[in-house]
Length: 157
Image 1 (cartoon, rainbow, N blue to C red):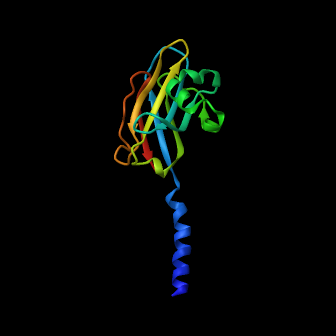
Image 2 (image 1 turned 135 degrees about the vertical axis):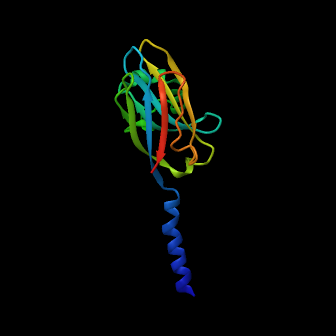
Image 3 (image 1 turned 30 degrees about the horizontal axis):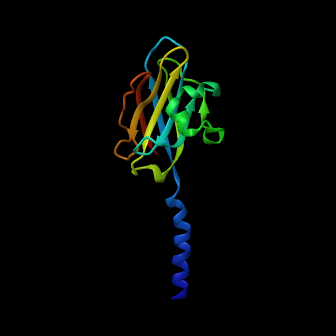
C-alpha cells in the first residue's frame, strides 16, 4: 500500500508542472498597404477589462518609439525585462509578420485577449487596433484591424 501511495505521489509531482506549461502559438499579422515608414507593432495579452498582462512580440527595434504604442507602453511600463528577447524589425507596408511565441497555458480559455497596438512615424497611432479573444475556439479565426492591420490570426501548436 505504501509503495502504491509513493508511486501516485511521485506521478502527481511529475504531472503538475506540465499543467502550467507554455505552448507554442504562431501569430500572423498582415498589414494594409500605406505610404510611410515601417510600422511598430506590439502584440500583448490583457485581461477581459483590457489590463495588461504580458508582452508576446514587439516589431520595431528603436525603443524610443515604443511610447507611441500607447496601451501596450502604459501596461508594460516600458520595462526592458517585460519584452527583452521578444522584439524584431519593424513591419513594412503590405508585409506579413509570422512569429511563434511561447504562451502560458493559464491564459488560454480564461477570459484573456490578444491585443495589437500599431504606430508609424509621421502617421497615426492605433491603440487596441486588434482585440481577439485568446481561446481555442478563436484559434485560426481572422480578425481585422482598425488601421494598419489588414488581418491577424493565431494558431495553437
